[in-house]
Length: 562
Image (tube, rainbow, N blue to C red; front, top):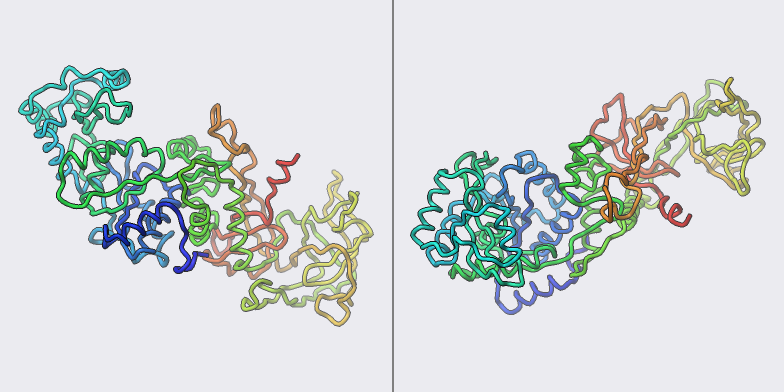
C-alpha cells in the first residue's frame, strides 16, 4: 500500500526541497533517475526511483529517466528496454504523471547531449582548465596517486584544441590520449587531481552508432546532463559524496547562465542474503548460476516481479526504510514482512498440496462428490466464497502425517483425528506401505456428522489440515524459491559465490483445487497453511506453474536461533 498523499515520509532531503520551495529558490522541482544501461535494475534502484519520483510527486514537479550511456562497450538496448519496463511497472498509476520523457515516450539519454557536452569541453580548454594528456591509463592513475603533474599539463591552449579536435575526428587509437581537467594535483580529494574528462573508444554505441569515438566520463557527463535538463536536485548515493566537489567545479568553472543543480547524497539500500552489485549479478547470470536476470531468486526488479512481489509492496518498503546519510544493511525479513502484510489482506486463499499423500475415506460413499463452502479471504469479506469439491479419495501433505508422532504433534497419526479444512473430522485407521516401506496411502474414516458449518460441527479436535479432492485435483509445477545465499552478507569476505544456497530452488509437482485453473497473473494466492504464490509467465492453461513469493512466516529466524 502506498502512503496517502497527505502523509509523505519525512527525511533530510525532503526538508531541503521543501525549504527551496518555501524560499522561492525553485518554482518547479525537477529530479532525475539516471541508471547506466549495463544491467537490469535491482531493489536498490527501487529506493532511488521512489525517492526521485516520490519527491516529484509530492512537490508537483517532474522526474526524468535518463540513461547514463557513456560507456558503449558495456551498454545494450536490452538493458534500456528492461529499465523502462521496470520503471513503468513500479510507478505507473502512482507517479506516472510526474514522469518526464522525450518525444515518443523514450527516456532521456546522456548521449542526447554528446554534442553540447563536447562544446563544454572545448570551453574548458579555451579557459585553460583542461588539457590533452598522452599518458597511459596506468601512468595517469599512478601520477594521481602520488600527486605528480603530467608533463603534458602545460600544453598551449591552441595545441590542446587541435589535439582534442583530432581525438574527436578519430585520428588516434584507443588509450592514446585523454582530456583531463586542470585542477589541483595536490588536492586531498583524489577526484580533483586532474581527473579524466574524455577517453578514446572506437566502439559502436547503442544510440549514436559510430558517430563518436570519444566518450565523456561519468563525472563530466552527469553534472552537465543535469544542467541541460534543468534538474534542480541531483540525488545520488553516498559513494558519490567525494565526487561532489568535482561536480560543482565543472559547473562553476564553465560560468553557466542558468540555475545550477544541487547534488545531495543518501545511503544506498543494501539487503541481507543477496548481492546488489550489477557486476556480481551479471556474473551469476553469465555463469548460469541463476536462470537469467529475471530469476526470482535475484534482487532484480524483474526477478521480484516474476516471483510475485507487487509494485505497491516495493514502493511501500522503499518509503518505510527511510532516507538517511548512514550506510546500513537492511534485513530481508523486513521486505518479507511487508509482502506478508499486504498479501494477508489481498491474497485469495486456495487449497493445494505440495507433496501429496493419498487418503481414502472408507466410510464415504464411492462416486459421491459434494461442494464445500470455502472462504476466499478471511481478512476481506467482500472477496466472498467459493465451492471446493470433496470426495472419497483425497490428497493431504506428507508432512501432515507422522507414523511415530513426536510430543505435541496435533496433525494426523495412527488412531488420531484431525479436521479437514472446511470439511469433516477424520480418523486414521490404517497405514499402507509399498515394498520399500514408504507410506503410500492412509485409510481413514470420516465423522460424517462433523461437517464444518453444519448443525453438528461443534466437536473439537486440536489439528486442522488442508487437502484436495483426488478426482478433481489439477496438477501444477510449483517452484519453491528461497534465499539465494546462506549468509547475511555474501560480500563480507571470500568468493561471494561460495555462499550460494544449494536449496534456493526446489521444484515439486503439486495437486491443486480446480479453481486455480482460472488463476490470473495479476492476482496473488495463499496456498493455505503453506505460503503465498503467484502464477509464473511460463504457465500454460494445461500446465500451471506457480512461484512461491514468500512463506507464511520467517523460517530462517528459527535457523538463526539454533
